Amino acid sequence: MGTVVDAPAVVTEKEVVAENMLGDKKVTVVFVLGGPGSGKGTQCSNIVEHFGFTHLSAGDLLRAEIKSGSENGTMIENMIKEGKIVPSEVTIKLLQQAMIKNENDKFLIDGFPRNEENRAAFENVTKISPAFVLFFNCSEEEMERRLLGRNEGRVDDNIETIRKRFKVFVESSLPVIEYYDAKDKVKKIDAAKPIPEVFEDVKAIFAPYAKYVIIYQAT
Ligand SMILES: Nc1ncnc2c1ncn2[C@@H]1O[C@H](COP(=O)(O)OP(=O)(O)OP(=O)(O)O)[C@@H](O)[C@H]1O
Ligand SMILES: Nc1ccn([C@@H]2O[C@H](COP(=O)(O)O)[C@@H](O)[C@H]2O)c(=O)n1
Ligand SMILES: [Mg+2]
Image (tube, rainbow, N blue to C red; front, side):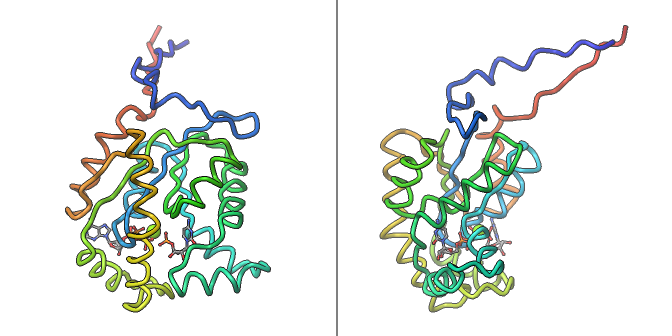
């Protein structure tokens, strides 16, 4: 027989407690924001591995929707090619479906909300507010270098669309970050550093979410 040691007290901290309901499940949501190529996807993979979150990239869900042959596919593809933001109802439906389908209760929502419409509609529809917003801050020069070197065959990783995406980020996405900053919910990371160094800073923020250590006591 073993003894399960209580979860550490730190998990009762305000930010860590899941207050949001999704159906009958309590969920914790972290929004992961930053300019195109700032390293959101890269760091989300690390967070998943170390802290047991599920990563939902709005961009990936939209690209999967195109591939699925959905009736919205052509519209989404055209918006992505132009670096424009897809109407919120489409993206929110995909995010909601993905969260409901998944058994996990901790989600990283990467690349959403991208504008004020995304933000307000998500709150209205889901009634979920994020535990916090992880913001990867990086210069356009560095982000451009990364995107042009990404080589994943994305239709929007060309210099013309990249410039449009930067403009949308500054005009529409930064105000969302400012909105959450005014609520003291933004955790800003210097994303210009090498990947392992960025993750060291990320780790410090996610430490309270470390998986519980279960110690069995021999009898
Ligand atoms: N800190 C870093 N230093 C150097 N290269 C990085 C760093 N982080 C990510 N990269 C590389 O930069 C590219 C973009 O990273 P990633 O796909 O994670 O960015 P993103 O923020 O998700 O971009 P997007 O918004 O376009 O989806 C990738 O090729 C990745 O390997
Ligand atoms: N909330 C969102 C997120 C993304 N898009 C569209 O997808 C493109 C790629 O997004 P990444 O996060 O993978 O870079 C983005 O430029 C938008 O066209 C969106 O519309 N709404
Ligand atoms: Mg990404």
